[in-house]
Image (cartoon, rainbow, N blue to C red; front, top):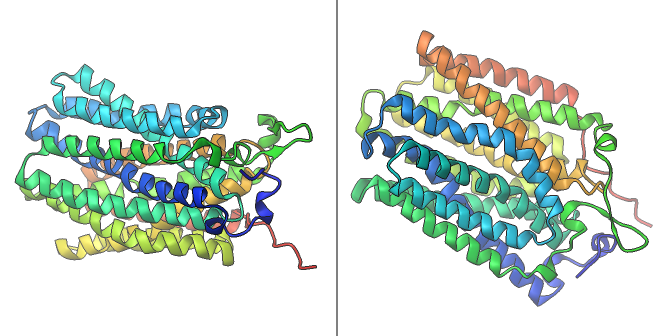
Length: 420
């Protein structure tokens, strides 16, 4: 295993050792399987509770809102937990199994209390897995290879999400909405098995949290106070909130608008929206990792911000359902870039601090805050003024987010050392 002070001088990752190559293939499958429950439970739970359980809208609203509260409260502590726990593979395995168990309870429970507990378990597991997988990735490949590895991670995740959306849509149509959650549980078990095949010995503990190795062999970690002195962190956190403030409500609002006149088409429409976006995200994620290395982080991230106002305007003025669903191509571009480059920027900001996963947790908290506010205000505006007003409001927020990021956020990619 390479130490943190050696990895940047290492040979290309795939050629280092056969064992490490096997671990990276297992990481590919982990990313493929882990996407399924996360992309299946949220979009289809409300439909399941309404059609199969015959819950009223108030109970459904309570059940659907709980993950948002858990996410906001638990993201940052979860990131700190990933930093603190040495056996990151085991953490990801247990999170995967917890995600699957939560899916099983969701489909078997009858009462609100049991569904709420299952939702909390699914939310916590979903919170732990992304920083855990990013930490494993960093521990396997190091900082210099991390951008391209993140692109590969996200590409496999999006392929898995496409497969999940297609199968979930077919299951909902031909079998039942309940079977969707059983399928998600099986795929979560697949993620746990994939994580099992990544040996702990291949994961450098210092690299996994972006820490320096001290002279005595210990891992150096900076204080929270020292961490907050970097003003780029506050600017990036605000940028993340603004991005999701504009982005999060667009897909749910589109789904509501498309299915308003045809409730039976709700699941197929949602599946189509997810599939189109995820298909685009796969090549975008691969390209984003490479371009972030060659062009820098900021130019690539600006493209994600720029896609948002265009998407909002097209949703506001479009009428044909097939045209509106095709606009999800822009969601694939924006979200595909964000999922890769945001974590790369966090890794840049966390360099040699030992707080990589804590900062991931902070970033994900910002995502949750922006998304929660987005859905709240978009829902209120759409209810009072109509769907077009809701999309125009989100478009204005997207334009403001783009301007803020362009003017305030500096480039975080460190300059390449001059050749000797």
